[in-house]
Length: 130
Length: 123
Image 1 (spheres, each protein chain N blue to C red):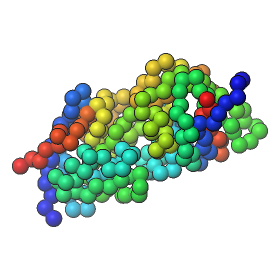
Image 2: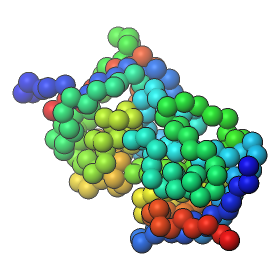
Image 3: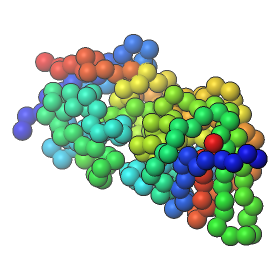
Image 4: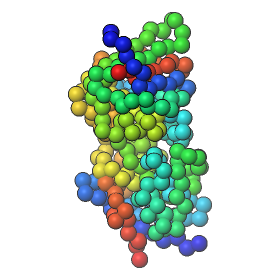
């Protein structure tokens, strides 16, 4: 793999009670810590704050778990919605569709492939690399 | 404080509504979760009704004080969560119901594509 630059990173702090409801749709919702409680309920809440450079198709989403007993996971971005970068920069918010689509389903969404292997746990670091 | 009611109709390409929004004492927050500060549509609803505009990403408010919610949903979460709680939801983007919470997004609780001119006082 060629050298990658870090575009965004955060550590998952908590998991909302509604996260499992979105899993059958292959969707994970991320929100930063400024999100109000009702939105935290839908999401993996993380402490990321800075978008270093904009996400684009071809970038990677990597999950690094806190312990050696879980495996790291890596996904390739296939599409980036037109509002995804602005939402991520401002609110730490992005909706990830694990569907490999080449056109984002909604403006605030990104698509990645392959399908989600395992739900990331609290303490996992996620990174967008490009 | 005398509150006024407004009718909020869908904008071009929008869906749902129309909604009648009238704050009540103790339930007068125009709760804005658009990001980017207070959205002009939220400000207009507050200005016309006498409600208090509030940025949900800056501080927290009890749900029972909320008269309506203003979102700019580009995804899946905000468009479903507030209709699910049966809070009147105004989306400034022309979104149609989508996502796992689609069953909750009904015309009597949700309207989208709303611009400031789609908010009018009911005389």
